Image (cartoon, rainbow, N blue to C red; front, side, top):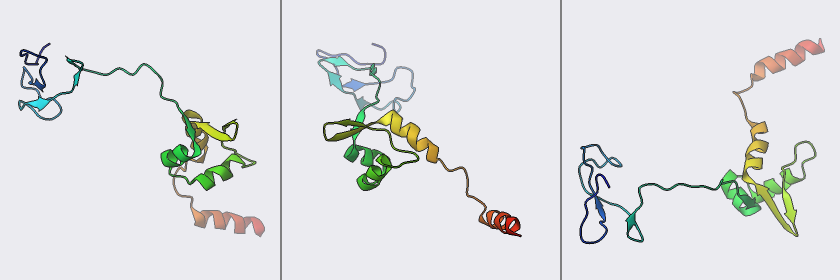
Length: 123
């Protein structure tokens, strides 16, 4: 492997060959993790990360209280999509992200212009 010192056993020190920095450290030595005697150069995640979250995990993910999430489940105009398995409520993270996208605010409304429009319509 390029840029890695070798000894009697698998090393725990890596040094860059060409002077480029590794993780912002440069030519200094740095510790790297061993995985069963093999140095892991990269990790590839082959599964999609779209978990089902219970309300407690969803509250932590979204910074919305569990009580408010329960209110959104029963909202008549824009309910939060969920799965009910027995008594457990689960929400898929991607579906929550799509659902909350409808609440995206684009700038601050001009309150003076809105009031002026309403007053003009009244006259």
